[in-house]
Length: 114
Length: 113
Image 1 (tube, rainbow over the protein chains, first blue to last red):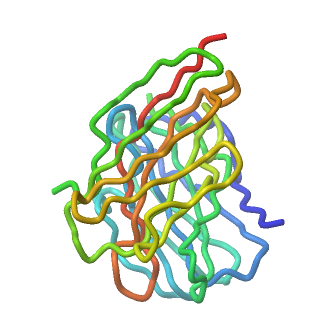
Image 2: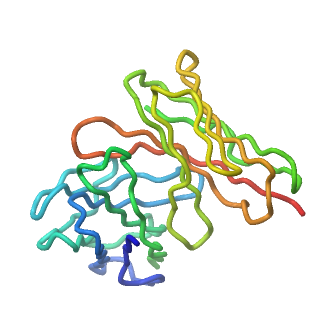
């Protein structure tokens, strides 16, 4: 059974703080993704990584950076948190050679920036 | 530019009846589609998919229909159950070798007992 875990379920941070969200998957997947989910906006891709140390910008990368030093771990970094980054953050992973394109999601981190 | 559109933000049906969730897409190069289900405070879970070489795929109470000429797909849930109440996302691979998915904005389904 594929498992994707995220470091926190709920997080409250102050404006200007540096925030780290961590994601770990145990299925040796090459691809990992960070999304944010907001009401009425669906799932929007922030960054993704298709291999260790490789990353590509998604649709909304501004204000975020990522790190992938190990295959199983993908971190999302908010360099200086702002209130408009209050959101549900979802990590996902997938196998590069999967014909089904299926992504497996973690439980999400509800981040509130005050 | 939204390539995958779910035009109904919400849908309410009675338990036991059919739920039909719709999805339209603009990119004729899309050749695979997925539906995900998401409960509050949980991550989305994969529900069912369909390849463009088919026009129907069925899994238990869930059936997805694909109309390529209309660039439209729909998810049918029969019979609907209160536990089906969730947000449903339609998605399609965005192309390339890294299997990015483009998601619709989602439809909140409420099944009333």
